[in-house]
Length: 225
Image 1: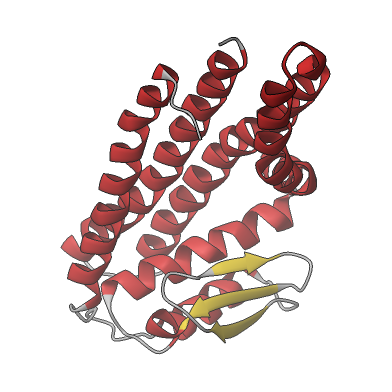
Image 2: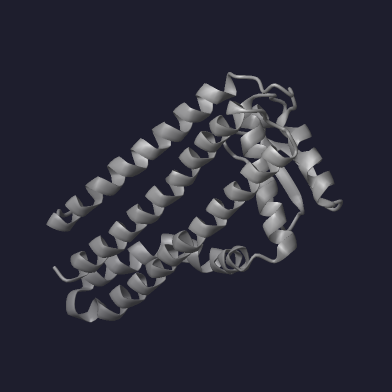
């Protein structure tokens, strides 16, 4: 193993990612202990929103784990973590509405969502193979330039994926806040609490994107050592 000063560039990103994760966990934990006035579970919130949107081909399912909530467009399923699916908390309502925001994007053919989906295979490849090729290229020295360039290009696809993810997540949260307010799912100050939950979650995507960008810069500097 070797050390290069460029590794120091990653420190702000590591701190930011850690802080954002602690923030979202703390915010979610706080509002997961407060029941909403309407008392609807996450599953009921999702089903109500889908019904009001006229979406009949998307099912709502529980999924194992914590904060594992997501919308699967290929299976047409809103999957809610166990702590959201059966909970009547403000946090559960916000998360369920957010996932339904992704459903609305799918129905409307939201272009950034489609672009993100198309980038998933190359982003997965880039996150796994990119760093390996860069290290191989560095070890090979002058003969490894092509490996370094390919590795950096692959990892750049990861950056692009994270950048495209930002408008997708912010747009889904915007839809969620409008829906829970229009449908009366949350009342008064509960809407502000939901906004805090979704904003904290959204910031984790910002932190992840910035960290990935710092990684790309660090790889580039490392390849020029």
